[in-house]
Structure formats: C-alpha cells, structure tokens
Image (cartoon, rainbow, N blue to C red; front, side, top):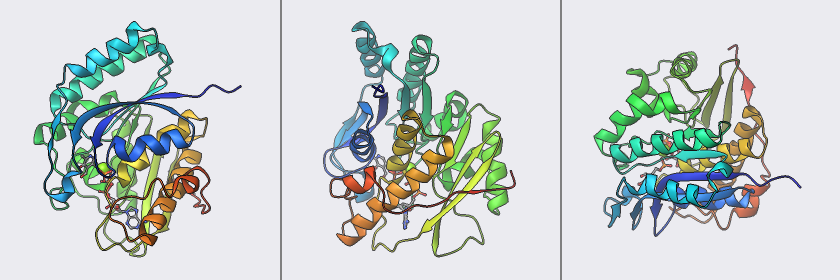
Length: 290
Ligand SMILES: Nc1ncnc2c1ncn2[C@@H]1O[C@H](COP(=O)(O)OP(=O)(O)O)[C@@H](O)[C@H]1O
Ligand SMILES: Cc1ncc(COP(=O)(O)O)c(C=O)c1O
Ligand SMILES: [Mg+2]
C-alpha cells in the first residue's frame, strides 16, 4: 500500500471562516495528505474584515512543538513543511530553524514558503518586519516559493512590465535557492481582462495557465493559501510540478465556482469537497519558450 504523506503546515488559524490553515488543512486532508497544523496566530476571523480578536503564538512555541514531535520519534516522517501567514519575524526565524531540524532527519523533506506580505489596500495586514524577513531570509531557505504578483514585485524591487518580465523575475528568484516558483496570480500590464493567470517556473521550463476570471462583489480571501497547500499536497502525492500546477488550478476554480454559486464571501470548502478531490474542469498549462 502506498504511504500517506505527512506535511507540517505552519500558518494562521481563524475560528470563523477560511484563511491560512483554516483554508488549506481540510482540502489537503481531503485529497489524501496527513496534515500537522501548527497555527502561527489564532484570530477570530481573517484581517480583511478590518477587525479581529485573538493572539500571535509565542515564537518559542514553534521549536518546542517541533521538538515534541521529535521526542516521540515522528519527525523523520515529515515529508514537507509549508509556511504562510506569520504573526512576527521571530516566528519566521523559528520556522527556518524547524525546517533545518526536519531536513537533518529527512534530507528529502521539502519546504514551501508562501511569502504572505499583506496587501494594505485589500486589508490583508502583515507586520512590516515579517515582509523584511521574507524578502531577506525565507526565499533562500525555500525549495518552493509561491508569491502573488505583489510579492514577486517586492522580491525583485520593481513592478513587472509584461509576462516575459514576470518569467524573468520568477527566474531570478530561482537563483536565490528555490527549485520552483509558483506565481499564484499574475497582474502585469496588458494581460487579458477575462482571465485569471498563473505561472510556474523551474530551472528547466516555464508554464503559463489561464482560468476564467469570476465576478465577486467582494474578493474571497484564502485563495492563495488554498493554492499553495493543494500544490504541495499534490507534489507529495507524486505529481510532477506541472501536474500539481494544473490540478491546483482546477480544484481552486471548483471552490470559487461553489463560493460564487452560494453568493458567499467565505470560501465554500465543505460544500466543494468532492469537487476539490475530483475537479470537473481541467486547465492545460502552456509551456513558454523558457
Ligand atoms: N478565477 C478567479 N476569479 C476571480 N477572482 C479570483 C479568481 N481566482 C482567485 N481570485 C481572487 O484573486 C485574488 C488573488 O489574490 P492575490 O493577492 O493575488 O493572491 P493571494 O490570495 O495569495 O493573496 C484573491 O482576491 C482571490 O479571491
Ligand atoms: C489571518 C490571515 N491569514 C492568511 C491570509 C492570507 O490570505 P490569502 O490566501 O488570500 O493570501 C489573510 C489575509 O487577509 C489573513 O488575514
Ligand atoms: Mg496570499
């Protein structure tokens, strides 16, 4: 029997609704991965409501929890670490120490960093020191980096001018260490206004993918977290990079269709669970020149 992969997911938890682990854990489990959720913050709701209650996990808890798993002899079973929304830069440094610890016992373990830097206009609030940490240290430690356009621009210190430019910028991130860069949402001048575009860049190849742009009265939150979680889960389940990319686009689109049909602001993950596991739509990634 094929082994079920194990994934340590270090990101936010919201009591109500879906963002961070609250957007990613159930879908990753639903497609067949054992998830170890480690919550960097526990907030009542995501920050785009403009108000929330709750607190940030003390950074020392991250190594303590990893050590606890080590002490029961399970750390070597960890196939991957995912990090997303962080409450402080110190938490970020603690995660990198945890990643080193896991790679020491399982050198094949992957680290996916979703560099959630916030989007002040949209109300996604992240402390500045977290962005500085992500720009400075996280990219070098990651095997897989999943920025959105704003985060890609921040890494490169300039705005992308075209699709070719986005590819060149993502490629420049590979030079810092990652094997793969997945840009979860492209926004460059001149792109089609009826499509939602994503990009996957490895050392050997680049792929571009388009899916339909759906209309929402208020953009749902947690889509990025769902995207990075499903991508990593599918890689652990044995997909190639491009297979995982295509699956992720389809499964996320299914969730958005269900969410739109329900006229809901929060992602409809429970209702969409069968569509996540078996997407009915399929999007083909197009290989780019390079
Ligand atoms: N097919 C789609 N149609 C319309 N909006 C989408 C679609 N897919 C994703 N979105 C929205 O696009 C935005 C992507 O946000 P962005 O900041 O680029 O990434 P992230 O979710 O990582 O922060 C989100 O607001 C999400 O709800
Ligand atoms: C607590 C929390 N976690 C994660 C996110 C990131 O969500 P997204 O996947 O839309 O980038 C947000 C965005 O506001 C948030 O408030
Ligand atoms: Mg995001």
